[in-house]
Image (cartoon, rainbow, N blue to C red; front, side, top):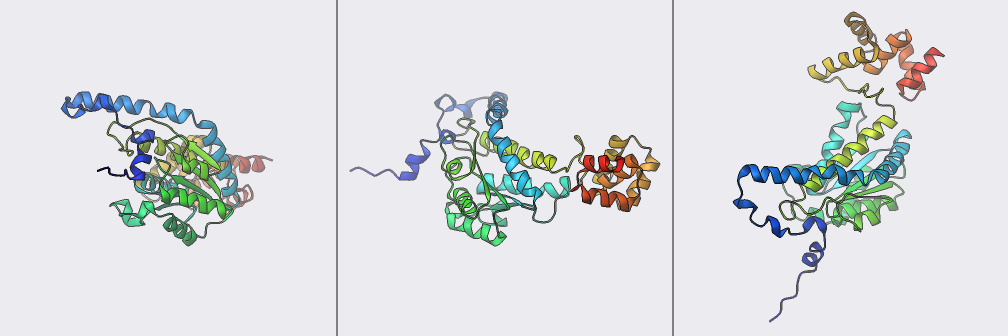
Length: 309
C-alpha cells in the first residue's frame, strides 16, 4: 500500500531553510562548548549573507523613505518569529526616533496574543492578513514589509499581495531564493543563510538575518528622514531617567556646550533635543528653533543652514 506524500512536506523539503544536515546528526552527543562553537560559527556567516543583498535593501529603503516623507506609514507583517521581529522593530521606533503613533506598525498573524504564544493556523491565512491591513487602512502612501523565513507563509505573502493591489510600496523579506514572497513584492530581499543548526529552526540564522535587515530598514529610513544629526539620535524621546540622561549627553556631543547651557536650552525647548541643539548652535530662542525646524521638515542640518543664512 502506498501513501501519498503531503504536498506541503514536499514543498518544505525544497527549501534551503528546512534542509537537513547529516553532519550534525549527533550534535546532541557533543560537549556543550563544542555545540556553542558550532552555533557561533554558523552565526558568523549571517552578516555576509546580508551584505550580498545590500543593493536590494537600499532600494527598498529609498522607496520607504520617500513615502514616509509624505506622511506614509511603515508596516511590518509576518507570522511567528518573523512577525515578532517586525513588532519588535516597530515598537522601538517611538523611543528611538520619536515617531508618531502608528507611523511604524507591526502586525502579526493571530494578533497581540501571538507575541507570546502560538496561535494555531493564523500563519496559513492570507485572508487574515488582508483583514489586518484593511483594519489599518493601508493605502498608496504606505509601505508594507512582509517577513517570512521560508518565503511561502500565506499570511506574509497575502499581506504583500494585498498591499500591492492597494497601491502601497511592498517589500518581501525571506531567506530562500525564488520565494513566492519576493515574487509578490515590488522589492524582493532574499537573504540566504543556509540550513539551520537545528533542522527547520528558523528563529536561528534566518531570524538573525531578518533582525539585521529590519534594523537597516527602520534606522536608515529614519536617517533619510532627518531623525538623526550625524550619528546622534536627536529625536530620542526622553521618557525615563536613562533617556533624559542620554538626551543631555547628545546635546553635549553635538554642541560642546556646558552643563548649564544644556539645561537652559532643554528648559527653553520643553526637553526637545533637536530644538535645544539648534538653540545653542544657532543662538536662537526656543520658539524660533521650533519654527525653523518645522519649516525644514524636522531636519536639523537644514534648520542650521537657514538660521545661519
